[in-house]
Length: 568
Image (cartoon, rainbow, N blue to C red; front, side, top):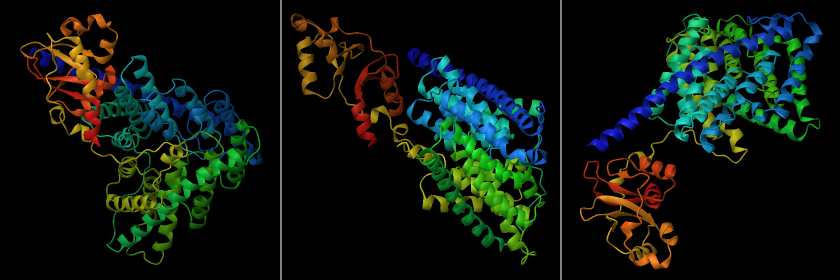
């Protein structure tokens, strides 16, 4: 009873510590997100208006004339120098690097990414690069969570959770979307739904959103009219829009990585100049169509509020795609969220124009299709469909359009998934030989207990001779055994490696004289996942299994091999 009490108390203390750290990461992520926001505005004003200001001003209103063509190129040179000589991981959209750290490195990320990813992305977006700010926020927030976990020497599972907390907090603080931050971290970063991680994500998102609302205020990202589902005939139109969004997503994914391959292998100039070349192309497009500069929230708002004519909508759809893939493919730094919303809104608005003209009585306004289109494209590009639905709802606070929003998003996801298994995030990892599935499946090790697979062996009696135990090791499947007394109570453990260290003269002595205290034990009622975690943490191949009571009697033994065999 006492042993169980302390074991449960240790777990409780660890949980409390993790919750406290999740709150800390949420607060830190919020300040990082807010700081990044003002840093971006600072560079935007410096590049386009030559003013030292942290106030948001749209680059569409610049008065640079032809000189504006050079602005993204100048920013590209600065970004190229950072990614070439200081922090290579600051290149690109950031989320794949976070996913890789979770999958392969136990959540460990280099601390300096927090500074240089923010700097590179702010320079890239601030100078007109047609990328978004969410990818950098996710990577920087996750980097902060990872850094805190590493500084406190937490185990890999806890570091991973803090990485997810950083991502959730960053999204929540940036877009005032606390629920979407949690869901995005679950769907894309952690790929699990466990009580410990879910609670931590909620805590992080809560504190990040609270800090953001205190400093920036509480208001939706887009102010739009109330749109709704007008008639049942619209099911057909939203079905078609979902299909178009899925095809657009596949086009975006392929164009981004084809362009990246082209710049890496075909463009024969120094690497740090490649983002400048991409910026020059974006500058030329922006001279004629300045709405493509930056993340474009102002233009998205105009599309949602039906303030753009059809001809301009089509041009925005085409040239935002070109500007986006050139910016990202040339090696600049920025996210895919805002561009996918922009492109999706333009696609939806154009589609709305086309069907609204002949069928005004049975179709919603054009802005409704723009709203659904931007969610559907992001859902198909990222395969974070649930997050896409929630984030658009939280960014607009328009629940009336939720039915067509859900329908088009899942259709777009289905179309994209049927053509390519990779998302815009996992494609980058696939090209490196890293395969990640975004399906959250139940872990069989969490559903089975130690008592389901353990061997019913009670170990060696403390009065047995060492040579007898050695022979048992050679004939059996274990290289470690527990030592018990006449009442089967655990006295210690000994391994084959321990015996091999002894001289042969000692092999006739009693095994109880050479047993040592076990680093840990397994309990019959705990999960195989917990037992395997203990083995990995303490670097042992097997564990004695004891009762969860004060008698501490050995009832069996469980090995790593048995657990893995049952899993398969």
